[in-house]
Every structure is written in C-alpha cells, then in structure tokens.
Image (cartoon, rainbow, N blue to C red):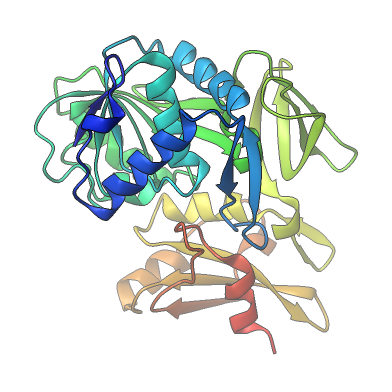
Length: 342
C-alpha cells in the first residue's frame, strides 16, 4: 500500500491488512479536528503507559527531522514500525508534514524482503536492519532506533554497503516517547561518529550525577530528566555511556554494562547482557548472559577477550536460549535480573 500525502484523499484508501488498517486509522485521527493524540510508551524503562501529545508538537518534531535529513515533497518513505508507538506514528507525521509518498509494510523482522525500488527515507529497529542487510542499499537515508546499534551490526552494515555502489546514509537515533521520537542523531555510515548531535532548538546539560537533561520547548514542556549517563562535547553533542539504573557496583567499582556489551559484540555475533547479581562480599557480582546455545568456540572467544580493567571480566558466563524483551523488542533487563535473583 502506497499513500501519497501530496494529494491525499482518505476516502479512496483501501487498506487490506490489519496493519494497513491501523495506519489509516491513525492518519484519520491525526488529520481530525482534535488537538492531540494518545501515544503508548515502550515500557523499556517502566510500566507501559498512555499519554496525550499535541499534534502541533509532533509536527515540530517532523520539521526537525525532515530539515536535518533534507527530505522533500514527493520523496518516497517506508513505514515498517508499529503505529501504536511514537516511532511509527512519527513516520506518518513526517509524511504528512513533508507531503511524502509512504509505503506501508507490516512491522516484521524482514520488512524489506519484497522491496525492489529505491526508497528515500526509512526508520527501522536494529533487529530489522540485521535481517535486511541484503536490501538496505535501496534506502537513501535510514535512521535506526529503539535500541543501541551494536558494534557488530555497524561492521556488518559497512561490509555490505562498501560492496555496493550506493549513496546510503545511516544514522543512529537518541530519543524517547516523551521527546516525540529522537532529539539527536549520530551518523554510522558512510562514516562512524562517536557523538550524537542534537537537532535544532534542543539544549542539553548534565545533572549532578552526570545524567542528561533535555530542554526541547518545541516538543515538551520544561526540562526532561533522563537516567542516561553521558559525556557532553561542545554543548550540542553527547556520547551515551550508560543508564544510571543499569550501573553495576562491584567491590566499590562502578561498571557501565552498555560499554562492556559493546566491546563483547565487536567480537561475537550474539546478543549479550552484563548484569550485577547480589553478592555478600562484592555487593554485586558481574555476570555475562549470552543468548543462544553454548559452544566451546564461543566460550573460548569470550575467555580470550581483553577488558580494560580486571574487574570488567565477568565472574560467570551464562547461556540463555532467549533473553527476555519488552513488547517492542528492547532487552528487558529487569525481567532478566529477576531470573537470576535468589
């Protein structure tokens, strides 16, 4: 299904699949006379909740992204994210704002499977990209969000695209439901950047604990306090270090699990999570959970990994058939920790 927002006539749309019906329902809702729409949070940092968002602020967010990526009237975009969440809703709003043509595809793991034509713009999750590497060269500008992009996936992207004659640009995003999708982007192809750059009219500072505070008056009221520990550069760029509630305190040393996970994923092609499990002598004992079946080669690769600090080496490596995830595919650290709590 393709929807042309340059000459949209709602009554002519004929959705066939359940997802197409959901997309059309949201378009009708967004173009209605009401001032706001309901958005469901992802639940990755707490209980999922519904909250209302002003349509005018969603259009402000769309203007920021379309301006940053230089999207123009008539460009072809692809929607393959659930419209229940802000990620899918904002793909529709960007199409409304910039008068794009929008291909609507089910939000499955391989959304590009049947894609043959080139697309100007698309947003996907890391897992979708992982399962679409053979087709991402067909996308001119791709943004990846919903979870961090692993070093292993970045290497796969570069390996695939360097063999293609393509002008593809890929960005990792930083944001949350409350900021109406992303407020910052970081290029990962054709070059890899270390710092996120904030969009227009966004201000960032740190609180006393080093966590990011965001002022985005065009998107939300007041300052938004995150639990993300960051390093700020030049006032408008930042590097994500860890979530404060994920920090592990082992023997008096603070350990940022996300940084260790990035190191491990450079060397093994598995989902991994570092956890701090209660320990009488250390306070928290560092363990590494690896998704999938155990094998000797993998155990040897993990054993040979060189960590910057001796206390970064996990006390135990545990293999788990499937790591628990939230409904939108993010790692559910709270549930995983409960599995190993006594």
